[in-house]
Length: 285
Image (cartoon, rainbow, N blue to C red; front, side, top):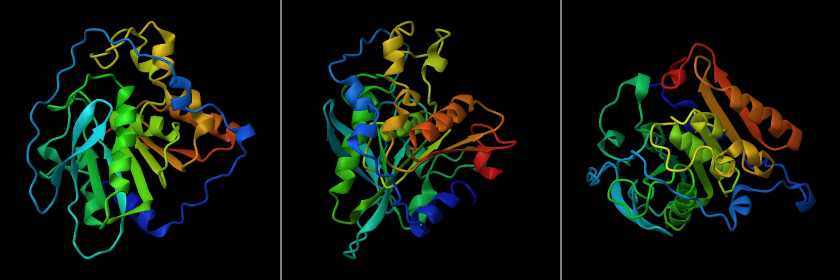
């Protein structure tokens, strides 16, 4: 199966330590710094969580809870093999809205495989967190705001596991998870490398028509609300090597713009557009 197959090979074979070192005077404001003192204002919206979280097969995942400011949040994670070895780990930010569920171990077709199983099948520890307001989690859906903090706390949890090599923790996600991955890159967060599959660098382009994803929990006319949810505004803060993938038949213009900005700031961000692919099948091309 070719779905994401190249990424585990990259993680296991490439030396991704070559992050560009820049002096503090050359740093651009990061996402978390920009958000200091800002309180997002949530409004009524159509979002619905997925509800109770299914228990996974013991040989594939265990169900755990990690702490965040919103409370204890559910996640699936590869169980400890018990051999005393420390392994590389992938934090997978799921696509869509509502939470995590049985599709992470059920069979899937290649044209929309959301299991991320290529990572665990390659011997990489896989953590799949849910965010605030998802499943039966505490907190409210914030659309790329508080969820960024949840992601960073999930990384902290992963780094403390005795069978995880804390120096080799990677981040990847598809669609909405790809957007969260880009935001984490500009936090900046301590990941060995980051992979965004079809995220949106500029969320303002998504919500500008008032429709957005159909569940916008903030006033889309408030430019600051959108700015603080858009990774493209904080490109200069990227430290971890970050790779963006999308199909040529779908939206990618803001990713190309983000790559051009990254070159100006001399930060490690690369955009890979797959000709003939769309948002769900580009990894098959």
